[in-house]
Image 1 (cartoon, rainbow, N blue to C red):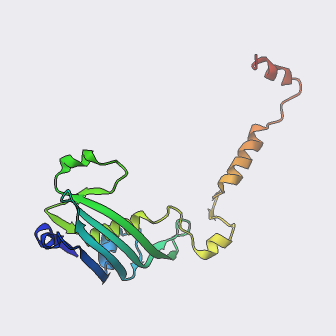
Image 2: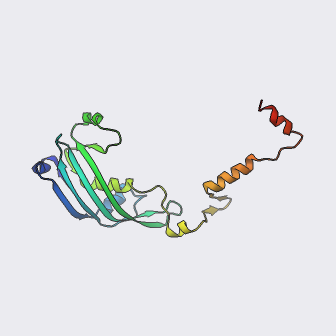
Image 3: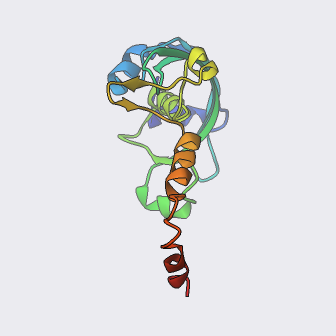
Length: 181
């Protein structure tokens, strides 16, 4: 769904209400080939409206499912999407300085609001960094190979503490106190 600014002008008084299902799997696989394995139809409920500063506001609730690779084994993991987001679109990039850095404000490109792109960007941004299959969540076993293995942070800290507690030769223990002065 793309809307030209001229198309949206007729919704100045009353917002454009959205209630549709978008099929964005092909676009998602093209834009994020290593992240998106599959994407169901996304049900979008929302609205597009103008505010008093002639900014375009997009408010949307997106639901669906996305299949992504596990961050540990690359096995497919299906995650549910239930996302709400609000974004503001402005015409002049000079006005960006008027907003906080944390506010979702974007400059309209070619006077066009690309709703599909906004939805897809928000879906990908909401994915956690660590995604595990149900089996990986239940299991404590981490990947290993020839001459290597992955350990948890807790195990690493324990090994580090053991390495720090090297038994000193009692004859040299007195020198340890020398450097504390």
